[in-house]
Amino acid sequence: MVTPPHECKPENVQRELIRKAKKTEPVQLFPVDLAHGQHYHRQHAVNSSRVINIEDLRRLAQRRLPKSVFDYLDGGAEDELTLAENCRAFHDVLFRPRSAVAVGDCELKTRVLSHELSFPAMLAPVGYSRLMHPGGEVAAAHAAGEAGTGYILSTISGHKLENVKAGSRGPVWYQLYLLGGREAAEGAIDRARRAGFSALVITVDTPVAGLRERDPRNGMKELLGTSWFARIPYVPNILAHPGWLASFLLDGGVPKLENVVTPGKGAMELVDVSAALASATVTWEDLRWIRELWSGPIVVKGLLTGDDARRAVDEGAAAVVVSNHGGRQLDSVFPTLRALPEVVAAVKGQVEVLMDGGVRRGSDIVKALCLGARAVLVGRAYAYGLAAAGPAGVARALEILRSDVERTVRLLGCPSVAALDRSYVEVPPAWSAH
Image (cartoon, rainbow, N blue to C red; front, side, top):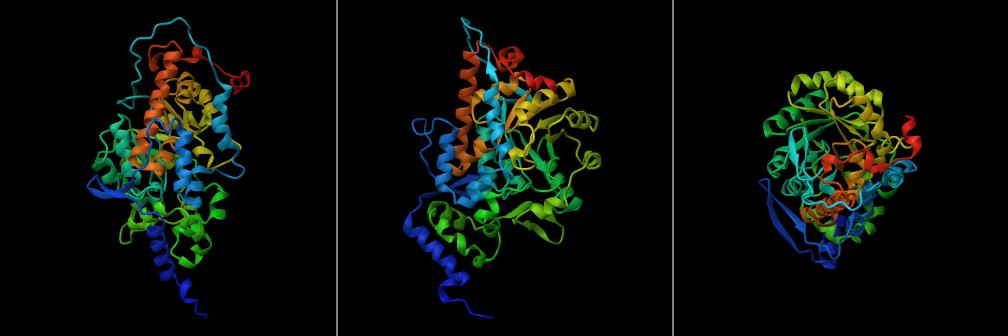
């Protein structure tokens, strides 16, 4: 075995990263006591004069994050056709406003699974959030609660679910993967019940992980791994983002999956979960088993067809989410906005219909409501804010979207989000053929 040069030894690489991070950009950190844990977040100017829309938050996130982390958040599967179509599909739906209408107090509140939300949007589950900002899931849930809306915690999370729930004043749901097998899942379900989570979200579109080609090119697997030698090719880009690096190292580096706990083994390491997902497929039969463990509402996420939506209703779902996983699984499927009307028609009002995918503006939310969604889930829109500025960034993202929704509804001449319907929009004729 050849002994590596002194400067290439892993322990020296780590020391050099810390030294350069501190020397290059002194980061002003302050403790934030959220959910009984000390977390740090960096102050960013995300006021209304600098950050006008979600794309502004995206640019801030791109500047702060290493390429591997940003592209994990920003990218999609294969050619990223569905990723792009999720956003572009909203352009195909045109508004039909009512003119010369005086709109007084515009009511934005809605109810989702008996929870009153301040406006019709919740925060979707986003994996690896703690890599984007040390506050991660706790910070996002806290911001959602302060804004009067709900948060959905991903199984692939770095903070304990108890801390996430304690950090929010709003409803918090738990999104379940069967990582670690049924025994680990049973433990998480029991913990979620005891912590006060009000719904369980079952994601059904991940029999295997999609091929997100940006990740292997940018070293996401190497960042999550334990080998410093493997990370060496990506060190220059990491050093170019010293603010993120300092926060990452002060937070202890790569966190574990705190909510995937196998008895006798402890929390699962936060590594590339592709292999784990391949052995954790959720089937309709699993929903029956989960129903025996969970007495609260079950939400089935990841549906794009009326047939699957009807099956979810038959299996006892209280709500369904029209979702293609943000274009991160099977590429070249329908954008979710286009799939939404088919699912709404199929369930015939028996369950609530939510949707996610491509939502970047409040007008996108309004279009989804016009086509039958009760509310939308936003993922990247708030995750860009989290990556850019922690809780303040998430709060700004929600503020932008809520303001956009109110302005759009008023310009439509509509008194409330509850009054929105198909008459306020025109969709391409081809959409009605399915």
